[in-house]
Length: 239
Image 1 (cartoon, one colour):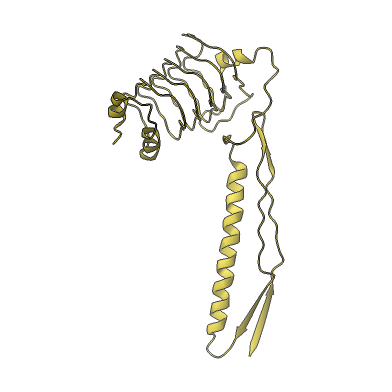
Image 2: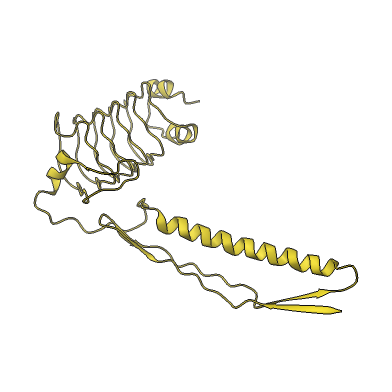
C-alpha cells in the first residue's frame, strides 16, 4: 500500500483598491479557506487514487475560479451604484469640460482628464454638446433639459439622478451608461445605440425609441420600466 499526503495551507484572498483619476473605491475583501490536508492512498486497482485526483482537481478549479473573478472585478472601471464617487472636482471651469469632451479612448471609457459634470446646468444648450465624447463622465444631478446631445458618445458615463427632459440623443452611442433614477421624459433615442445601459427607476414618459439599436437582454430590462408609454413600447417591440 502506498500513501501520498498533500498539504495545502489555508489561504486568504483580499482584493486591492482600484484607483483612477475619475473614481476611487475599495473592493470588498473576499476570504475563503481550503482544507489543510488531503491524504491519498493507492490500493489494489487504484480506484482510491482516482478519487483523490478528482477531489484535488475540483478543489483547484474552485480556487482558480475565485481568482479569476477577483481579477475581473478589480480591472473593471465601471462605477457601481453602491460604491462611493470621488469628491466633486474643484476645477473652476469643470463644467466647460463638456464642450471639449475627451480626446482619447471612447469605447472603453478611457480619458486624458476626468470629466466631472455633476450639478452642472446645460439647459437648452443647442450647440456645445452635440457630437462630443463624454466617456466615463460623472453626470449625476446635472441638468441637460432640452439640450442637443445628438451623436454624443457616452461610454461608461454615470448619470444617476440627472435630468435629460426633452434631450435629443439621436444617432448617439449610449454604451453602458447608468441612467438610474434619471429624468428622461420626452427624450429622443432615434437611431441611438443603447448597449448595456441601465434605466433603473428612470422616468421615460413620452420618450421616443424610433429605430433604437438595443440588444435582446437590454431590451427586456428596458421594457420592465413601467413609465414607457404604449407608443414607446411598440417602437421598442416590448411584449
